[in-house]
Amino acid sequence: MAYLTAEKKQELFGQYGKSNTDTGSPESQIALFSYRIAHLTAHLKNNRHDFGTQRAMLRMIGKRRQLLEYLKAVDIERYRAIVKKLNLRK
Image (cartoon, rainbow, N blue to C red; front, side, top):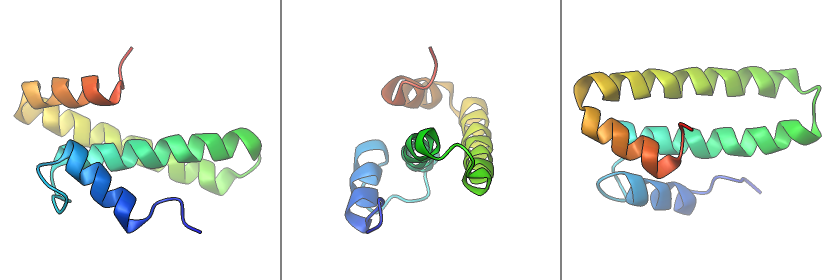
């Protein structure tokens, strides 16, 4: 069973994007990456020597960071809103 079903993706896109089918906006992509990163973090706590998964997670973190930097440059208010919603910065 996959941890990320089509219904869960639509829920994430609906919650953070403009609609359930809004797969391209930076906010929805950042939310999707954050969900996947949280899942992999939990997996890596139990499987410390799974270096392939660790590398994949680090690549996702980098992609999320790039999207956040883009959003920050384009529209600072949208950036602040998504960071606050996802609780990314402490």
